[in-house]
Amino acid sequence: MYYFNTNNYDYAVSDYTELLKRQPDHVSSRLHRGLSYFYLEYYQDALADFSATLHYDPSNWAAYYHRACLLRTCNPSQALKDFSISLLINPEYENVGAYLHRALIYCKQNQFEEAIADYEAVLVLDREHAPALCNLAIIYMRKNVQKALQLFSRAIEAEPTYVRAYFCRAYFYAQINQLQQAYSDYTKSKKETN
Image 1: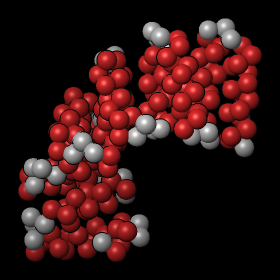
Image 2 (image 1 turned 60 degrees about the horizontal axis):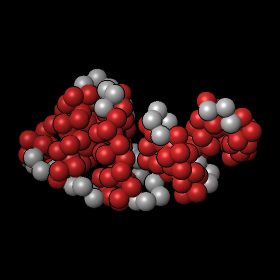
Image 3 (image 1 turned 180 degrees about the vertical axis):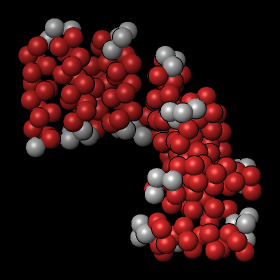
Image 4 (image 1 turned 135 degrees about the vertical axis):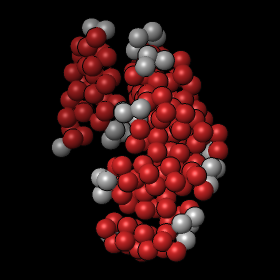
């Protein structure tokens, strides 16, 4: 774990591989070797280790989560399943990323009600989660102007340095022809990036 915790992933892979030769069912080592491969951008090896982790421990929510992250763009339907299983096993805050990633897939598939449900689940766990508030506001831009503006404002209140919330709200103000507010938010977003 020392090499993994100090971001020396090449050495971590080597150590985990040695341990797995002696103990192939050592779940933590297999999961962490998969994470090491992931950080080294050896995605096929990471995917194999996450899948093997699940073979030895089908209730390992982290392996489902990380495998889903790898599959998000190339196999979104499998990623949705993996995120969902991960959340069934662990619906708590430490797994909040599964809600966020699953919601992004739902948005890409135009399944906005499912995405809203996931973002709202994040807000149950953390009322001030600025990215969830901002993404939820973007969905509501299509159907409820006031709610979208409230959510953008909540995101900014929750995290005043969250540039994306200012920028998105500025864009939205421009779309609804409130140009003074758009300019004000755009100016604030520029200040936060400097």
